[in-house]
Image (cartoon, rainbow, N blue to C red; front, side, top):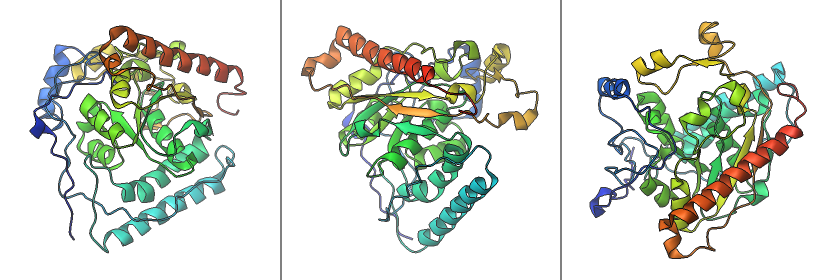
Length: 373
């Protein structure tokens, strides 16, 4: 099998990447000790993410040479507009069958020729044939996701999608990626900016890279946006997915606006994304902070089902979801110096945050039910 290397020569230009404050640092000595025990960090990072901008050691997230895939042309698999009833056995069976068929076809086609991935490790063939069919079981049958506002997604060119974050685990990011691909008329992919922790696990890190995620640093983000990619960021980070259930749908701090700086520098529009439903999949009643500090984790949630039910408690509750893509906030109206103006950054960050917050309130007012709406 022949694999073509298309890696960008990132670090050769001598520029330092800076961390986008997508996720807050755990920020304690226990975390540092835990990181040391886990071994070396992901190749494109030198330290945990922080709320501000700090130096990074690489400009593009590197990938291994043994995973490259040739992008096969073909029709975009679009699901029907109907949503099957919750826990419909026939619907679940069909979804699982489609996932198995997709995986089988992927393996058959994979053996037949050379293949490639992009600079960040994104494997379009794997994502379409294996990853998305598996996620659609959750998207269509479990969460029954309603998607609106797709007319605001550009047909071509880059855009920065900024969404609220919740749910103890970042399942909302996965569902948003399916919503973009399956509901965009051209089946575009969402390239997600993920926290460094996502790349510290060998299995999770490999899957994240193959399905289009990359480290949340400015250079990676700018590279994607200048290449015309739809790029997703969740600025609340751990503060969002780790908040208590009583604080549901109340947006946490958006950091210092690094995502706005990136959008201004690349001249792409910012698309606010509002997600209802993710708060109820793991209602977080409390946080085992002492144990989390020992393990070097941002939090350990206590929910109605976890840890009471053990591994079964990891099954997300079947809340009804609604993902809305808002009207783009254009950045072309600002001059070249705007990216270095703290007042402009604050203004646009506040505008994006307020748009998402008010949209969430409107969506919640029209919500017919949490689990059976």
